[in-house]
Image 1 (tube, rainbow, N blue to C red):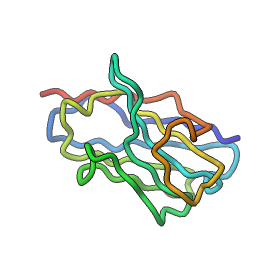
Image 2 (image 1 turned 45 degrees about the horizontal axis):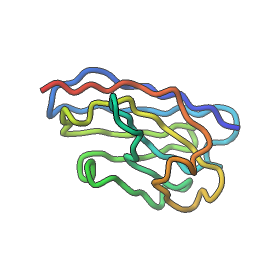
Image 3 (image 1 turned 180 degrees about the vertical axis):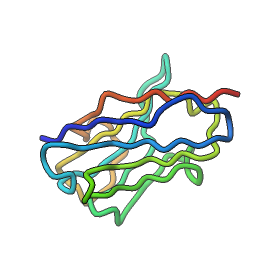
Length: 126
C-alpha cells in the first residue's frame, strides 16, 4: 500500500498561486492513478482534478478548469497540483488520493480512491 503526504498549502491573496505536492512512499507510485479533492468547512469533499498513472489523461472540475493543473513525476514518486488565479472560494483542505484499480482511467468518485493523505490547508484571502 502506498502512503501519501501533502505539502505546499498556505495563505495567499486572491489572484495568487500555490503549488501543492503529494509525496508517495511504499509501493511504486506508478501503480496508482491520482486525484486531488478538497473540503471546505461545512461542505462535502469534492473532486478537483485527476490524472492517470501514465499522465496521458487528466480531468478537472469545472470550477478550476483553466486555473489548476495536475501533474505527476513517477520517478520522484510525487504528484502536483499547480493552482493559479486563486479565489476565496478555493479555500479548503486539499487532499491527494490514489487508486490502484483501474489506474488507466479517470474517475471523479472519491469512493473509488483507496488511499488518502492527511490534507493541507489552502486559504485564499480577498
